[in-house]
Length: 494
Image: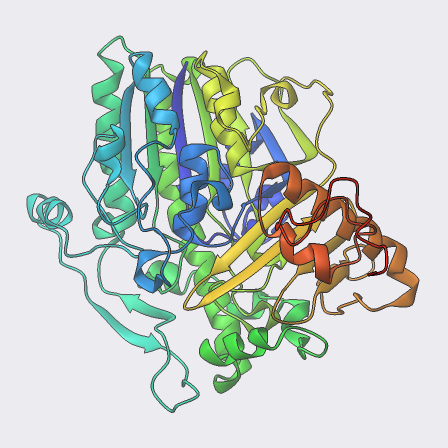
Protein backbone atom coordinates (compact mmCIF):
# COMPACT_ATOMS: atom_id res chain seq x y z
CA UNK A 1 0.00 0.00 0.00
CA UNK A 2 1.34 3.40 -1.04
CA UNK A 3 0.47 6.63 0.77
CA UNK A 4 -0.21 10.14 -0.50
CA UNK A 5 -0.61 12.47 2.47
CA UNK A 6 -1.93 15.95 1.64
CA UNK A 7 -1.90 18.57 4.37
CA UNK A 8 -2.76 22.24 4.60
CA UNK A 9 -2.00 24.72 7.37
CA UNK A 10 -4.51 26.72 9.37
CA UNK A 11 -7.46 25.53 7.29
CA UNK A 12 -11.07 26.14 8.28
CA UNK A 13 -13.23 23.11 7.65
CA UNK A 14 -16.16 25.27 6.51
CA UNK A 15 -14.29 26.49 3.42
CA UNK A 16 -14.73 23.19 1.57
CA UNK A 17 -17.67 22.31 -0.63
CA UNK A 18 -17.75 18.77 0.76
CA UNK A 19 -18.18 20.25 4.25
CA UNK A 20 -21.07 22.43 3.16
CA UNK A 21 -19.65 25.67 1.78
CA UNK A 22 -21.89 26.72 -1.17
CA UNK A 23 -19.49 29.30 -2.61
CA UNK A 24 -15.88 28.09 -2.48
CA UNK A 25 -14.76 26.01 -5.45
CA UNK A 26 -12.94 22.91 -4.14
CA UNK A 27 -13.78 20.31 -6.80
CA UNK A 28 -10.68 18.20 -6.26
CA UNK A 29 -11.06 17.78 -2.53
CA UNK A 30 -14.80 17.30 -3.04
CA UNK A 31 -14.00 14.49 -5.48
CA UNK A 32 -11.65 12.91 -2.96
CA UNK A 33 -14.35 13.07 -0.29
CA UNK A 34 -16.97 11.64 -2.65
CA UNK A 35 -14.79 8.58 -3.28
CA UNK A 36 -13.51 8.11 0.28
CA UNK A 37 -14.43 8.59 3.92
CA UNK A 38 -15.12 12.11 5.11
CA UNK A 39 -14.88 12.50 8.87
CA UNK A 40 -17.31 15.13 10.04
CA UNK A 41 -15.79 15.45 13.53
CA UNK A 42 -12.05 15.42 12.92
CA UNK A 43 -9.86 17.38 15.36
CA UNK A 44 -6.35 18.54 16.01
CA UNK A 45 -4.88 17.61 19.42
CA UNK A 46 -3.65 21.22 19.75
CA UNK A 47 -4.27 24.27 17.57
CA UNK A 48 -0.70 25.25 16.86
CA UNK A 49 1.63 24.11 14.08
CA UNK A 50 4.69 22.41 15.55
CA UNK A 51 3.02 20.47 18.38
CA UNK A 52 0.20 19.23 16.15
CA UNK A 53 2.64 18.13 13.44
CA UNK A 54 4.74 16.37 16.08
CA UNK A 55 1.60 14.53 17.19
CA UNK A 56 1.07 13.34 13.61
CA UNK A 57 4.70 12.24 13.40
CA UNK A 58 4.63 10.34 16.68
CA UNK A 59 1.02 9.35 17.30
CA UNK A 60 1.41 10.96 20.73
CA UNK A 61 -0.46 13.78 22.42
CA UNK A 62 1.63 16.93 22.94
CA UNK A 63 2.01 16.49 26.71
CA UNK A 64 3.67 13.15 25.94
CA UNK A 65 6.03 14.06 23.08
CA UNK A 66 6.72 17.42 24.79
CA UNK A 67 7.31 19.50 21.67
CA UNK A 68 4.86 22.12 22.82
CA UNK A 69 5.47 25.37 20.93
CA UNK A 70 6.50 26.86 17.61
CA UNK A 71 10.17 27.76 17.88
CA UNK A 72 9.54 31.28 16.54
CA UNK A 73 7.53 32.08 19.69
CA UNK A 74 9.09 29.49 21.97
CA UNK A 75 8.47 30.12 25.65
CA UNK A 76 11.10 27.73 27.01
CA UNK A 77 9.86 24.35 25.82
CA UNK A 78 11.75 21.74 23.82
CA UNK A 79 12.51 22.72 20.24
CA UNK A 80 13.07 19.19 18.88
CA UNK A 81 11.69 15.75 19.64
CA UNK A 82 13.80 13.63 21.93
CA UNK A 83 15.94 11.04 20.14
CA UNK A 84 14.10 8.14 21.81
CA UNK A 85 10.59 9.13 20.65
CA UNK A 86 8.94 6.74 18.17
CA UNK A 87 8.00 8.22 14.80
CA UNK A 88 6.02 6.44 12.10
CA UNK A 89 8.63 6.91 9.32
CA UNK A 90 10.86 4.52 11.28
CA UNK A 91 8.30 1.75 10.89
CA UNK A 92 7.78 2.49 7.19
CA UNK A 93 11.51 2.55 6.49
CA UNK A 94 11.79 -0.87 8.11
CA UNK A 95 9.31 -2.07 5.47
CA UNK A 96 11.37 -0.65 2.59
CA UNK A 97 9.15 2.39 1.99
CA UNK A 98 10.44 5.32 -0.01
CA UNK A 99 9.75 8.43 2.09
CA UNK A 100 9.16 11.87 0.63
CA UNK A 101 7.98 15.13 2.19
CA UNK A 102 7.44 18.19 0.03
CA UNK A 103 6.57 21.42 1.76
CA UNK A 104 6.19 22.69 5.28
CA UNK A 105 8.15 20.89 7.97
CA UNK A 106 8.06 23.19 11.04
CA UNK A 107 9.04 20.30 13.28
CA UNK A 108 12.11 21.57 15.09
CA UNK A 109 15.27 23.63 14.82
CA UNK A 110 18.08 21.05 14.84
CA UNK A 111 16.29 18.11 13.21
CA UNK A 112 14.62 18.52 9.84
CA UNK A 113 12.50 16.18 7.71
CA UNK A 114 15.63 14.42 6.43
CA UNK A 115 16.46 13.55 10.06
CA UNK A 116 13.44 11.25 9.97
CA UNK A 117 14.26 9.74 6.58
CA UNK A 118 12.20 12.01 4.28
CA UNK A 119 13.48 13.10 0.87
CA UNK A 120 12.66 16.54 -0.49
CA UNK A 121 13.86 20.14 -0.26
CA UNK A 122 14.35 21.35 3.31
CA UNK A 123 11.66 24.03 3.72
CA UNK A 124 11.63 25.15 7.36
CA UNK A 125 9.54 27.79 9.07
CA UNK A 126 5.91 28.82 9.28
CA UNK A 127 5.41 30.71 5.99
CA UNK A 128 6.31 30.18 2.34
CA UNK A 129 10.14 30.44 2.24
CA UNK A 130 10.19 32.43 -1.00
CA UNK A 131 13.95 32.99 -0.79
CA UNK A 132 14.73 29.25 -0.71
CA UNK A 133 17.35 28.22 -3.31
CA UNK A 134 15.25 25.38 -4.69
CA UNK A 135 12.26 27.69 -5.24
CA UNK A 136 14.46 30.35 -6.85
CA UNK A 137 15.93 27.67 -9.11
CA UNK A 138 12.40 26.55 -10.03
CA UNK A 139 11.54 30.12 -11.05
CA UNK A 140 14.76 30.64 -13.00
CA UNK A 141 14.42 27.40 -14.94
CA UNK A 142 10.96 28.45 -16.11
CA UNK A 143 11.72 32.14 -16.60
CA UNK A 144 9.10 33.05 -13.99
CA UNK A 145 9.12 36.34 -12.04
CA UNK A 146 10.19 36.43 -8.38
CA UNK A 147 7.99 37.05 -5.38
CA UNK A 148 6.67 40.61 -5.01
CA UNK A 149 3.65 41.92 -3.10
CA UNK A 150 1.71 45.17 -2.81
CA UNK A 151 -1.39 46.56 -1.09
CA UNK A 152 -0.72 45.05 2.35
CA UNK A 153 -3.67 44.64 4.70
CA UNK A 154 -2.96 45.14 8.39
CA UNK A 155 -4.55 46.78 11.41
CA UNK A 156 -3.05 48.76 14.28
CA UNK A 157 -1.51 47.22 17.39
CA UNK A 158 -2.54 48.44 20.89
CA UNK A 159 0.78 50.31 21.13
CA UNK A 160 0.11 52.13 17.86
CA UNK A 161 2.47 50.08 15.71
CA UNK A 162 1.34 48.47 12.44
CA UNK A 163 -0.29 45.11 12.97
CA UNK A 164 0.67 41.73 11.54
CA UNK A 165 0.40 41.39 7.79
CA UNK A 166 -2.92 39.69 7.03
CA UNK A 167 -3.07 39.75 3.21
CA UNK A 168 -1.51 41.31 0.13
CA UNK A 169 -1.57 41.10 -3.65
CA UNK A 170 1.08 38.81 -5.12
CA UNK A 171 2.54 39.89 -8.45
CA UNK A 172 3.25 36.46 -9.94
CA UNK A 173 1.32 34.18 -12.29
CA UNK A 174 -0.11 31.03 -10.72
CA UNK A 175 2.74 28.95 -12.17
CA UNK A 176 5.19 30.98 -10.08
CA UNK A 177 3.33 30.67 -6.78
CA UNK A 178 4.87 28.62 -4.03
CA UNK A 179 1.78 26.39 -4.09
CA UNK A 180 2.30 25.52 -7.76
CA UNK A 181 5.99 24.91 -7.06
CA UNK A 182 5.16 22.46 -4.24
CA UNK A 183 2.70 20.53 -6.39
CA UNK A 184 5.26 20.33 -9.20
CA UNK A 185 7.91 18.92 -6.87
CA UNK A 186 5.38 16.42 -5.50
CA UNK A 187 4.50 15.26 -9.00
CA UNK A 188 8.19 14.81 -9.79
CA UNK A 189 8.54 12.57 -6.75
CA UNK A 190 5.45 10.59 -7.74
CA UNK A 191 6.88 10.00 -11.18
CA UNK A 192 10.18 8.82 -9.75
CA UNK A 193 8.56 6.53 -7.17
CA UNK A 194 6.23 4.99 -9.77
CA UNK A 195 9.08 3.31 -11.58
CA UNK A 196 10.87 1.74 -8.63
CA UNK A 197 8.54 -1.12 -7.73
CA UNK A 198 8.85 -0.16 -4.05
CA UNK A 199 6.04 1.23 -1.86
CA UNK A 200 6.13 4.93 -1.04
CA UNK A 201 4.87 7.46 1.45
CA UNK A 202 4.73 10.93 -0.12
CA UNK A 203 3.55 13.91 1.90
CA UNK A 204 2.77 17.31 0.42
CA UNK A 205 2.42 19.94 3.15
CA UNK A 206 1.17 23.28 1.85
CA UNK A 207 2.04 26.38 3.89
CA UNK A 208 -1.40 27.87 3.20
CA UNK A 209 -4.09 28.91 3.66
CA UNK A 210 -2.23 30.20 6.73
CA UNK A 211 -2.11 33.98 6.87
CA UNK A 212 -0.84 36.23 5.41
CA UNK A 213 -2.93 35.49 2.34
CA UNK A 214 -0.60 36.43 -0.52
CA UNK A 215 -2.32 35.72 -3.83
CA UNK A 216 -2.28 36.71 -7.49
CA UNK A 217 -5.14 39.00 -8.49
CA UNK A 218 -7.07 36.13 -10.09
CA UNK A 219 -7.41 34.48 -6.67
CA UNK A 220 -7.32 37.61 -4.51
CA UNK A 221 -10.44 38.85 -6.29
CA UNK A 222 -11.97 35.48 -7.14
CA UNK A 223 -14.82 35.77 -4.63
CA UNK A 224 -17.08 38.76 -4.18
CA UNK A 225 -17.02 39.85 -0.51
CA UNK A 226 -20.78 40.30 -0.80
CA UNK A 227 -21.05 36.49 -0.82
CA UNK A 228 -19.45 36.31 2.60
CA UNK A 229 -21.75 35.65 5.51
CA UNK A 230 -19.85 36.94 8.51
CA UNK A 231 -19.30 34.43 11.34
CA UNK A 232 -22.06 34.66 13.93
CA UNK A 233 -19.37 34.77 16.61
CA UNK A 234 -18.26 38.15 15.31
CA UNK A 235 -20.80 39.31 17.90
CA UNK A 236 -18.37 38.14 20.61
CA UNK A 237 -18.31 40.39 23.69
CA UNK A 238 -15.85 38.28 25.76
CA UNK A 239 -18.23 38.65 28.69
CA UNK A 240 -17.65 35.78 31.12
CA UNK A 241 -14.70 34.57 29.03
CA UNK A 242 -11.00 34.37 29.93
CA UNK A 243 -9.53 37.90 29.54
CA UNK A 244 -6.72 36.55 27.36
CA UNK A 245 -9.20 36.26 24.50
CA UNK A 246 -9.84 40.01 24.51
CA UNK A 247 -6.07 40.57 24.60
CA UNK A 248 -5.58 38.32 21.60
CA UNK A 249 -8.32 40.20 19.74
CA UNK A 250 -6.37 43.40 20.34
CA UNK A 251 -3.12 41.72 19.29
CA UNK A 252 -4.73 40.71 16.00
CA UNK A 253 -6.12 44.25 15.58
CA UNK A 254 -9.65 43.13 14.73
CA UNK A 255 -11.43 46.23 16.04
CA UNK A 256 -9.03 48.61 14.25
CA UNK A 257 -10.27 47.58 10.80
CA UNK A 258 -13.67 48.24 9.16
CA UNK A 259 -15.99 45.26 8.92
CA UNK A 260 -15.71 45.49 5.11
CA UNK A 261 -12.05 44.57 5.46
CA UNK A 262 -13.03 41.45 7.40
CA UNK A 263 -15.39 40.44 4.59
CA UNK A 264 -12.63 40.96 2.05
CA UNK A 265 -10.14 38.97 4.14
CA UNK A 266 -12.55 36.03 4.30
CA UNK A 267 -13.12 36.24 0.54
CA UNK A 268 -9.35 36.28 -0.06
CA UNK A 269 -8.94 33.30 2.29
CA UNK A 270 -11.49 31.46 0.13
CA UNK A 271 -9.39 32.29 -2.91
CA UNK A 272 -6.37 30.79 -1.20
CA UNK A 273 -8.32 27.59 -0.54
CA UNK A 274 -9.27 27.35 -4.22
CA UNK A 275 -5.67 27.90 -5.32
CA UNK A 276 -4.51 25.04 -3.10
CA UNK A 277 -7.37 22.81 -4.23
CA UNK A 278 -6.25 23.28 -7.84
CA UNK A 279 -2.71 22.25 -6.95
CA UNK A 280 -3.99 19.21 -5.09
CA UNK A 281 -5.97 18.39 -8.22
CA UNK A 282 -2.76 18.38 -10.26
CA UNK A 283 -1.22 15.85 -7.86
CA UNK A 284 -4.31 13.63 -7.79
CA UNK A 285 -4.60 13.70 -11.58
CA UNK A 286 -0.99 12.62 -11.96
CA UNK A 287 -1.54 9.83 -9.44
CA UNK A 288 -4.35 8.56 -11.71
CA UNK A 289 -2.32 8.96 -14.89
CA UNK A 290 0.53 6.92 -13.43
CA UNK A 291 -1.87 4.08 -12.61
CA UNK A 292 -1.16 4.39 -8.88
CA UNK A 293 -4.62 5.22 -7.51
CA UNK A 294 -5.69 1.61 -6.96
CA UNK A 295 -2.63 0.96 -4.81
CA UNK A 296 -2.46 4.27 -2.92
CA UNK A 297 -4.30 5.44 0.18
CA UNK A 298 -4.86 9.19 0.11
CA UNK A 299 -5.19 11.33 3.24
CA UNK A 300 -6.19 14.98 3.41
CA UNK A 301 -6.20 17.03 6.60
CA UNK A 302 -4.76 20.17 8.23
CA UNK A 303 -2.69 20.89 11.32
CA UNK A 304 -5.38 23.18 12.80
CA UNK A 305 -8.02 25.73 11.85
CA UNK A 306 -8.13 29.53 11.59
CA UNK A 307 -10.36 32.25 13.03
CA UNK A 308 -10.64 34.66 10.03
CA UNK A 309 -12.68 37.07 12.16
CA UNK A 310 -14.62 34.51 14.21
CA UNK A 311 -14.77 35.64 17.86
CA UNK A 312 -13.15 38.90 16.67
CA UNK A 313 -9.88 37.01 16.24
CA UNK A 314 -7.41 36.04 13.52
CA UNK A 315 -4.84 33.27 13.37
CA UNK A 316 -5.17 30.93 16.41
CA UNK A 317 -4.35 31.16 20.12
CA UNK A 318 -5.43 30.35 23.68
CA UNK A 319 -9.12 29.82 22.93
CA UNK A 320 -10.37 26.29 22.31
CA UNK A 321 -13.16 27.08 19.89
CA UNK A 322 -14.34 24.78 17.11
CA UNK A 323 -13.02 27.27 14.54
CA UNK A 324 -9.43 26.23 15.23
CA UNK A 325 -9.79 22.71 16.70
CA UNK A 326 -12.13 21.08 14.18
CA UNK A 327 -10.30 20.38 10.91
CA UNK A 328 -10.95 18.56 7.63
CA UNK A 329 -10.27 14.84 7.61
CA UNK A 330 -10.66 12.75 4.44
CA UNK A 331 -9.23 9.28 3.81
CA UNK A 332 -9.58 7.26 0.63
CA UNK A 333 -8.44 3.64 0.87
CA UNK A 334 -8.71 1.61 -2.36
CA UNK A 335 -11.67 -0.75 -2.35
CA UNK A 336 -13.46 0.90 0.58
CA UNK A 337 -16.92 2.50 0.33
CA UNK A 338 -17.55 6.26 0.12
CA UNK A 339 -19.20 7.48 3.33
CA UNK A 340 -19.39 10.14 6.01
CA UNK A 341 -18.50 9.21 9.60
CA UNK A 342 -19.52 11.06 12.75
CA UNK A 343 -17.08 9.49 15.20
CA UNK A 344 -14.47 11.69 16.86
CA UNK A 345 -11.11 11.35 15.10
CA UNK A 346 -7.75 13.10 15.39
CA UNK A 347 -4.42 13.58 13.66
CA UNK A 348 -2.98 10.86 15.89
CA UNK A 349 -5.50 8.43 14.44
CA UNK A 350 -3.93 9.14 11.02
CA UNK A 351 -0.62 7.93 12.45
CA UNK A 352 -2.17 4.70 13.69
CA UNK A 353 -4.01 4.22 10.38
CA UNK A 354 -0.84 4.62 8.32
CA UNK A 355 0.92 2.04 10.49
CA UNK A 356 -2.06 -0.32 10.23
CA UNK A 357 -2.25 -0.07 6.44
CA UNK A 358 1.50 -0.62 6.17
CA UNK A 359 1.29 -3.80 8.24
CA UNK A 360 3.11 -2.24 11.20
CA UNK A 361 2.11 -2.13 14.86
CA UNK A 362 -0.58 0.56 15.09
CA UNK A 363 -0.43 0.54 18.89
CA UNK A 364 2.89 2.38 18.72
CA UNK A 365 0.78 5.47 18.00
CA UNK A 366 -0.10 5.36 21.67
CA UNK A 367 -2.66 8.19 21.66
CA UNK A 368 -4.29 7.27 18.35
CA UNK A 369 -6.49 4.47 17.03
CA UNK A 370 -6.53 3.08 13.51
CA UNK A 371 -9.42 4.49 11.51
CA UNK A 372 -9.36 1.52 9.15
CA UNK A 373 -12.39 -0.22 10.75
CA UNK A 374 -14.40 2.99 10.29
CA UNK A 375 -13.13 3.41 6.73
CA UNK A 376 -14.31 -0.15 6.01
CA UNK A 377 -17.80 0.80 7.18
CA UNK A 378 -17.65 -1.18 10.42
CA UNK A 379 -19.13 -0.12 13.76
CA UNK A 380 -16.37 -0.84 16.30
CA UNK A 381 -16.41 0.41 19.90
CA UNK A 382 -15.13 3.97 19.71
CA UNK A 383 -14.30 6.93 21.92
CA UNK A 384 -17.27 8.99 23.06
CA UNK A 385 -15.28 12.09 23.97
CA UNK A 386 -12.50 14.10 22.46
CA UNK A 387 -9.54 15.56 24.39
CA UNK A 388 -7.36 18.47 23.31
CA UNK A 389 -4.67 20.56 24.96
CA UNK A 390 -2.76 23.81 24.59
CA UNK A 391 0.50 24.94 26.17
CA UNK A 392 1.05 28.48 24.96
CA UNK A 393 2.04 30.74 22.07
CA UNK A 394 3.86 33.99 22.84
CA UNK A 395 3.64 33.01 26.53
CA UNK A 396 2.88 29.83 28.54
CA UNK A 397 -0.84 29.21 28.75
CA UNK A 398 -1.97 25.70 29.69
CA UNK A 399 -5.47 24.53 28.77
CA UNK A 400 -7.26 21.20 28.58
CA UNK A 401 -10.52 20.51 26.77
CA UNK A 402 -13.03 17.70 26.64
CA UNK A 403 -16.04 17.60 24.37
CA UNK A 404 -18.71 15.01 23.88
CA UNK A 405 -21.59 14.81 21.47
CA UNK A 406 -23.14 18.03 22.77
CA UNK A 407 -21.01 19.81 25.37
CA UNK A 408 -17.49 21.20 25.65
CA UNK A 409 -15.58 21.92 28.86
CA UNK A 410 -12.35 23.95 28.87
CA UNK A 411 -10.19 24.22 31.99
CA UNK A 412 -8.15 27.43 32.24
CA UNK A 413 -6.10 27.36 35.48
CA UNK A 414 -5.25 31.08 35.50
CA UNK A 415 -8.75 32.26 34.71
CA UNK A 416 -12.38 31.23 34.37
CA UNK A 417 -13.28 27.80 33.03
CA UNK A 418 -15.64 27.47 30.07
CA UNK A 419 -18.62 25.27 29.25
CA UNK A 420 -20.47 25.41 25.93
CA UNK A 421 -23.69 23.76 24.88
CA UNK A 422 -22.89 23.15 21.22
CA UNK A 423 -26.49 22.31 20.37
CA UNK A 424 -28.04 25.45 21.86
CA UNK A 425 -24.99 27.66 21.26
CA UNK A 426 -23.08 26.28 18.24
CA UNK A 427 -21.02 29.47 17.89
CA UNK A 428 -19.77 29.26 21.50
CA UNK A 429 -20.79 32.77 22.45
CA UNK A 430 -22.14 32.01 25.94
CA UNK A 431 -19.95 30.58 28.65
CA UNK A 432 -22.42 28.42 30.58
CA UNK A 433 -19.91 27.12 33.13
CA UNK A 434 -21.78 28.68 36.07
CA UNK A 435 -25.28 28.00 34.76
CA UNK A 436 -27.07 26.11 37.58
CA UNK A 437 -29.12 24.17 35.03
CA UNK A 438 -25.91 22.69 33.58
CA UNK A 439 -24.28 21.82 36.89
CA UNK A 440 -24.74 18.05 36.34
CA UNK A 441 -23.15 18.34 32.89
CA UNK A 442 -20.25 20.35 34.27
CA UNK A 443 -19.68 17.84 37.09
CA UNK A 444 -19.82 14.87 34.72
CA UNK A 445 -17.39 16.34 32.19
CA UNK A 446 -15.05 17.61 34.89
CA UNK A 447 -14.75 14.19 36.48
CA UNK A 448 -14.43 12.49 33.10
CA UNK A 449 -11.65 14.87 32.01
CA UNK A 450 -9.88 14.33 35.32
CA UNK A 451 -10.04 10.56 34.98
CA UNK A 452 -8.86 10.57 31.37
CA UNK A 453 -5.93 12.85 32.14
CA UNK A 454 -4.89 10.58 35.02
CA UNK A 455 -5.19 7.51 32.80
CA UNK A 456 -3.00 9.18 30.16
CA UNK A 457 -0.39 10.33 32.63
CA UNK A 458 -1.01 14.01 31.89
CA UNK A 459 -0.01 15.77 35.12
CA UNK A 460 -2.41 18.63 34.44
CA UNK A 461 -4.82 16.58 36.53
CA UNK A 462 -2.98 17.64 39.73
CA UNK A 463 -4.39 21.15 39.38
CA UNK A 464 -7.86 19.75 38.92
CA UNK A 465 -7.50 17.57 42.05
CA UNK A 466 -7.77 20.59 44.31
CA UNK A 467 -9.50 23.15 42.11
CA UNK A 468 -12.22 21.20 40.30
CA UNK A 469 -15.36 19.38 41.30
CA UNK A 470 -14.00 15.82 41.08
CA UNK A 471 -15.57 14.30 44.18
CA UNK A 472 -13.48 12.51 46.79
CA UNK A 473 -9.77 12.22 46.14
CA UNK A 474 -8.41 8.66 46.14
CA UNK A 475 -4.70 9.43 46.55
CA UNK A 476 -2.29 11.59 48.57
CA UNK A 477 -2.66 14.86 46.67
CA UNK A 478 0.48 16.31 48.26
CA UNK A 479 2.58 13.45 46.81
CA UNK A 480 4.43 13.59 50.13
CA UNK A 481 3.91 9.99 51.27
CA UNK A 482 3.86 11.36 54.84
CA UNK A 483 0.41 10.04 55.58
CA UNK A 484 0.24 6.58 57.21
CA UNK A 485 -1.17 3.80 55.10
CA UNK A 486 -4.91 3.60 55.42
CA UNK A 487 -5.27 7.06 56.92
CA UNK A 488 -8.42 8.96 55.99
CA UNK A 489 -7.33 12.24 54.35
CA UNK A 490 -10.73 13.71 55.27
CA UNK A 491 -10.42 12.91 58.97
CA UNK A 492 -9.93 15.89 61.36
CA UNK A 493 -6.50 16.54 62.86
CA UNK A 494 -5.84 15.24 66.38
